[in-house]
Image (tube, rainbow, N blue to C red; front, side):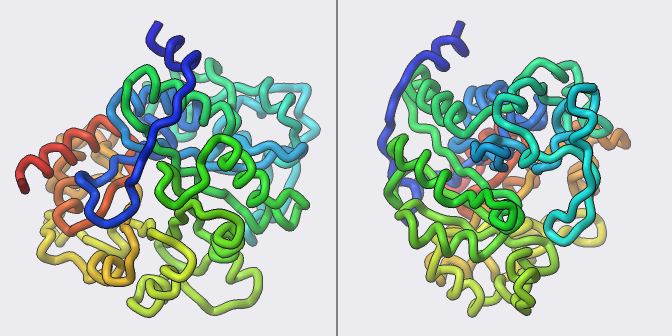
Length: 361
């Protein structure tokens, strides 16, 4: 009944999250409650919100007829049942995406009506076998459907909920005649997300994508930093700028000219466990301090509570898929001064954040 009420309601909540001086670091539900349900489904987003997430994060790709849908990747067979649908067998193709040759079924080869015939499946069943019990139950949502869910949840729960879409493969889609920026901005503006202080920010691993968005909207932007290599648009144009260079004080100052935040890979740029697997905030890199000096917020990714993703000292057992001390990891990173976390388990993130805030007041 609660989920029905949330879906039926419609609300707009004020927000002023981006200036420095946040009361609390943000808990951002990475692809929804992806530790508990198949990612990028309305159910996963709703559960994350009920767990207390401040923001939900939909990754966005394009359909052939120009609709924005939520998938981690444009390759549909990774997260849907398309490979088991004989009517789409002839859509399996090989193409080059972001410089890599890939074979599968791709969102840009399907209309939205065809996408709606598919059902979501767990992306990493070997890690999260319990999530497979939901395979085949949920549709692939559009960005508008996600906005509608957020508005409904705001009304039902009486609190603001943020949205942080990420553009996936923007150069690939632009080269395919499906540029993402205009439809993304149109949908967000139409739904009341227009200003830098609205409870929304747009992320991308590419640079040109964000710079185009910066010319189109006042919505806050976040530059994601890959663990290694270059942004794909830079590489495609023969440029030399690397993520490593972007993480320097000069690189961060350059980012601040078009974005309000950065999303670094947590261990690559902020805090690495020692040889025994312990996390000591005293050993953090100067990245957070340098980013704040440039006027940027810092939202590292991705915090996952399963043992396989945790430092050795925080694992609960030899079972790689069992949950370990994810709260401990998040608290250690919060002590470095970050402004929020992307996490697959929003409940873990909320408990860790609230405990950290209580301990430091």
